[in-house]
Image 1: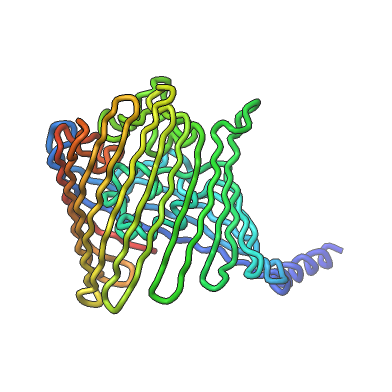
Image 2: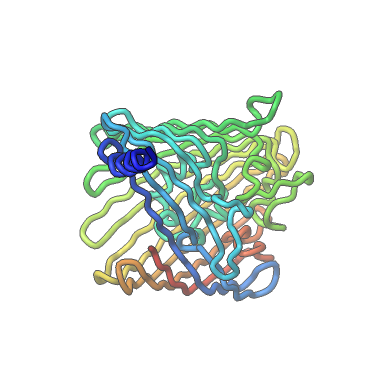
Amino acid sequence: MKKSLLALAVTGAFAAPAFAQSSVTLYGIIDAGITYTNNVGGHSDIAAQSGIVQGSRWGLKGSEDLGGGTKAIFQLENGFNVFNGKLGQGGLEFGRQAYVGLTNDQVGTFTIGRQYDPVVDNAQPTTFNGQWGAFFSHPADIDNTDNGFRVNNAVKYVSPRFGGVQGELFYAFGGVAGSFGKNSTIGAGLNYSGGPLYIGAGYFYARNPGTQFADGNFTASQNPAAVSATSGIWGLVGQPQNMQSLSGGATYTFGPVQVGGNVSDVRFDDANGVAGNTVRFDSFEAWGNYSLTPATTLGAGYTFTTGKVDATGQKPKYGQLNAIADYRLSKRTDVYLMGVYQHAMSGGVTADIYAPILGDASTNSNQLLARVGIRHKF
């Protein structure tokens, strides 16, 4: 009897793949470098920083064939600091992504979990930071085009591609008892991909972003003015009641050249705890990459951001120049040199390339940054 049960178990183990094929992939990126900034809170700074061109991470993703063209899918992605081994995203185990769902080539993809919003999915590829990382974001990633935060409790649907066009619907449950809308997010996106041309746009509206996204650019606090940096662009926003971000752009590739442009609009309601105080920022950017050789890529771009703070009448403006040189040592390893210069033009504000990463904004209208780094993918 025991031998019969053992034979049945062994037979079942080998028979399983006949009706359900599954796969799991381990992957990761390690990005490390040294960053010099001329003014961080009034002092020059040299820092070893992880995950700038791409966030340092490791992850697992997989699928199981359920038959009829349908697959079960999942992805778990951890962010970490390569210099000290600490977890990223506020210490979350899988802070970058954690979701499960179903996909079908004819129906689309439905996923639930911690996920990226439609601005990141559809518009980020048209930004220079979408090509080369955080420091090339619109000032301090004010519009989340650099995915400074992810969204918990999210349900996402992505359609199949029809004639090059793909759509996305997004909703995140707040999870607050007695207040269905609190900490919730709603969004949508659309993109077109055909040959050398890509066009993408995304939108999201988030309630209580300061508490909902406390592990990203925001820092949750009882003090409505407390943010992840002590000054800079986020100091104009504080803990708003609501946030909405709309972004769109395009890229075009011809020969060794790729050019792109993006426009974004972000608004914060009841900013800094002041009822009726709307803070708005509009960013406009243009950029280009040139493949000098099969191994060498040069890139440059410019971003102009203009804002308006209703409560004070401030109208801040920022101009930012971005440049990078990247050399691929192999298919999986590259080294790079990047530089950023930002000038705050008006509105009584200081320069702020990305205070949540650098630690603080500049104490004057200018900020200059240079970084050398290495990235390896596995």
